[in-house]
Image 1 (tube, rainbow, N blue to C red):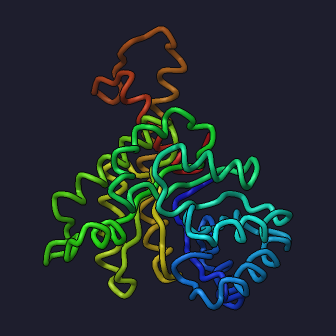
Image 2: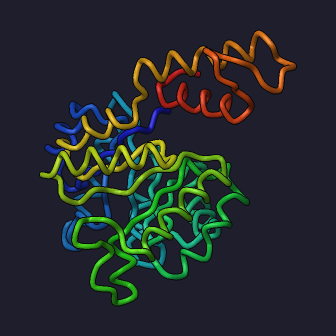
Length: 277
């Protein structure tokens, strides 16, 4: 499953779900949490379940409400026979909360939003213990500042302040420790496409493999950032081919430069991002 772009769609807006199918996103996240008012939760569950029962053109995930909210039980019950491709768990606090969701919902992969509470930060290392339950790992920079009384998570120029840079880095490493995709968080200003492109490019540079979006207009820039260029793919193929031709070699020369095991690992990652096995 290719996960460059994951587009949130309000669960109580079937019209937007329909439109989002043509956005170019790799998957849609049908939202039952923040984008749905409490008075419309029931309506959203009905709409999401109906949308899931249709023939699918792309993977469909559902963000349920947090465990302990009192809404998650009804969410899971509404999805019982609708078979979402994955569940997104907000305010996850380690692998134990993922296991609780799976115990409720059955064997469905989970994408935890792993940094939305202070306690969650200290559980990031636990995801590697049951990585088979995970579809990936992502983070958020909006709920955590509110949880601790911080005024913002960003500097005036848009960069994250040091506490949230730390959280971002820890999520990235936790995903790789669990051997699952590392998904970058949203870029809230959906009108600033230049800023989005720079943000997504930074995510790709740092090791994230995809990114969540809050508006269809963001999808092309995200897909572009997380799709390797033709030159990158050609070089990656050459690295893989060189090691396939000399499987016992620890290091090789390619185009006048030394390549070794880390280069091979990086080449395989580039090909995976490009959608090649």
